[in-house]
Amino acid sequence: MLLVFLLLLLLHPPLVSNQMTDAEHQGIVELHNRLRRSVLPEAANMNQLIASATLRNLAQQAADTCRFEHNYGGDYSGLGENLYMGGSNASLAVMLWFIERENYRLSASGALCGLEYGNGRYPQYASSCGHYYQVVQASVREVGCGKKACSGSSLIVCEYNSGSGSPPYTAGPSCSGCSSARPRCLDGLCVPVGTSGSTCSLACQSCTKLVGNATGSCDCSGSYVPCTKCDSDATQCLNNGTDVGASLTNCSCVCPADFYGDRCQ
Ligand SMILES: *[C@@H]1O[C@H](CO)[C@@H](O)[C@H](O)[C@H]1NC(C)=O
Ligand SMILES: *[C@@H]1O[C@H](CO)[C@@H](O)[C@H](O)[C@H]1NC(C)=O
Ligand SMILES: *[C@@H]1O[C@H](CO)[C@@H](O)[C@H](O)[C@H]1NC(C)=O
Ligand SMILES: *[C@@H]1O[C@H](CO)[C@@H](O)[C@H](O)[C@H]1NC(C)=O
Image: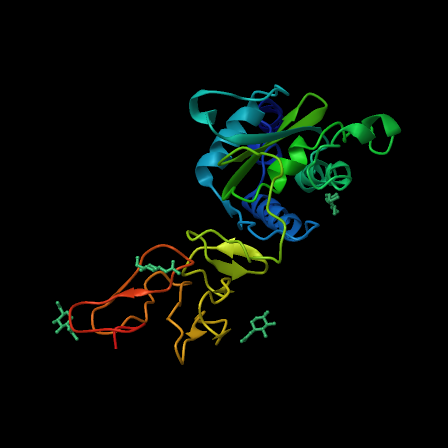
C-alpha cells in the first residue's frame, strides 16, 4: 500500500510545487507596483497594475510548454510578455528584468540601452532594456504570471495587457499626468475613480487651489470656474447646467436658458 502510494506520488508530483501559489502571484503583482513606483526620473503617468486571471492563465500555459520562446498571435496578440529561465524564485526574475534600468538610466530616451552589455556590468542580464520597459510601461494596467519547473530550471512568464515602447513613461511629479480614465492617485500610481484610499491626482486647472485630497475638490470662489475633475460624476454646475465634457483642461459649465455664469448660478 505504502509502495503504491509512493509510486503515485512519483508519477504525479504535486502540481502546486511547479506553479505559483496565489500568495506568490500577489507578491509578484505588488513587486511590480513597488518597482513602478520607484522609477527615476519619477513617472507622471504610471498606472497601478492589477492581477488578471486571464493573463495568469495564459502565462501558465506559456510556462507549461517549457519553451523559452516568446508567444505571439492568437490569445497572445497585443500582449506584452517577459520570460525568465533559471531559478524558481519569481521575485528574483522580476528584479532581473528591472535591473536593465541600469542601461536605461544612461539616457532618458533609452537610446543607449544595450551599450553596457559589452562593459561587463550585468553581462548576463543587461543586453537590452526591453524587460525593464515592460515592467515599467506606464499604460499597462494588468499582469498575470506563471511558473513551471522544467528539466533543471524554472520557466517564469509574465503576460501584460499591452506591450512596451520607448520611453516607457512620461517623466514628472508622480500622478501629475494620469489619464482621465485613471485620474486618481494611490501611492504614486494612477488608479480609477472609486479606488479605496486614493487621492485626487489632478491639479486644479482654472481654480485657485486644491481644497482636499479626499474629494479632489477645488476652491472655485471668486471668478474661477468649478473643476472637480477627479470624480467623473462630481460636477459643480448648478441648475441642471452640464459639465463641458471629458476635457480635463476645460472646467466650464454649459448652462440652460436663463442661467449664466461660471456655475450657471
Ligand atoms: C527571492 O528573490 C527575492 C529578490 O531577490 C529575495 O528578496 C527573496 O529573499 C528570494 N526568496 C527566496 C525564498 O529565496
Ligand atoms: C494631499 O496629500 C499630499 C500627499 O499625501 C500631502 O502632502 C498634502 O498636504 C495633502 N493636501 C491636502 C490639502 O490635504
Ligand atoms: C433640473 O431637471 C429636473 C429634471 O429634468 C427638473 O425636475 C428640475 O426642476 C430641474 N432643476 C432646475 C433648477 O431647473
Ligand atoms: C471651454 O469650453 C467652452 C464650451 O465649449 C468654450 O466656450 C470655452 O471657450 C472653453 N474654454 C477654454 C479655456 O478652452
